[in-house]
Length: 287
Image (tube, rainbow, N blue to C red):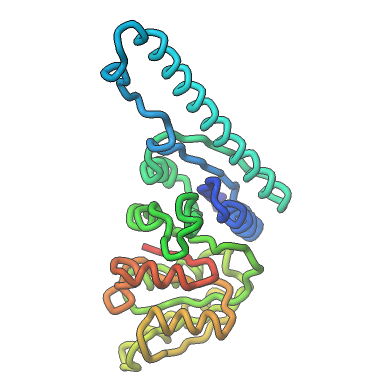
């Protein structure tokens, strides 16, 4: 049997969520034995623009001022790169202090989604914070790159909560769709979930088809040695699931990124932000 050498790809920035991303990466590494790759992407907006300032400068002063502006741009670019490397070194220190022995760092330039697309072939999972640096003071706003990555990635995406806490109870939002079935299959096969308690829940009407789907999901999980039970809840998915996570003190929510019922709106509609924002636990999204 060949060893699974796929990496945990953790996206870190200067936000308050970066430490939590590192803590979640260390937890996944401890349970799977996977190496961690920490990536910081310098976006196009971070780097100095190559603006032509000459149009507003009179002839006599043009050369000296243009040289000064170019020097300032070069200095800013160096400082931004130094900051990116410092963020990565801090991140590596966090995961190594948590017991991770295989941790690498990578500083990338350009678009975050493009950077993820380049590395996800070797990835087991993609880790990202709920909000980025620009969203720290906007509590109603999720990271602008989050949904782009969920839509583009073909690997599970773990959205880290503000702070890590030990994970033992997992809630699976199940609607019978292809991505939900894939999520249950992934849980059954992955060493990440071994020893955890799994609850599979559908929000909607208790039809024979719904009951059969839940029974099949439960049987698959139990065959993998997992403790699993099921439930059917009335109401709207975002409010019902959010309330259940809070009241039953679940530590993680797993759900398909795309479905064929009302849960579909959790990812592709406006309810996406409401669900992920309201959950104070990490959310695992499967395509």
